[in-house]
Image (cartoon, rainbow, N blue to C red; front, side, top):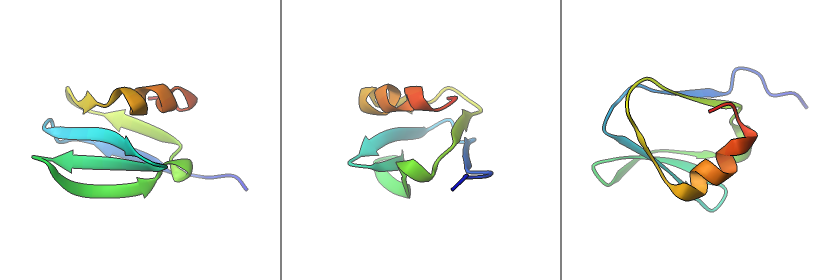
Length: 65
């Protein structure tokens, strides 16, 4: 099955992205704002400086981050 238009756009400069198991987790000030299964994501676009966990960067090599 082909996934279409499954791109996450991060526009908040204080957002932190991390990987929790098989989920992409977006945190703002330590509070989880978004949790999405990583397999459903086709790309991540960050508009500002953003923090990412090393685990997410390793898995993110499959995407066009």
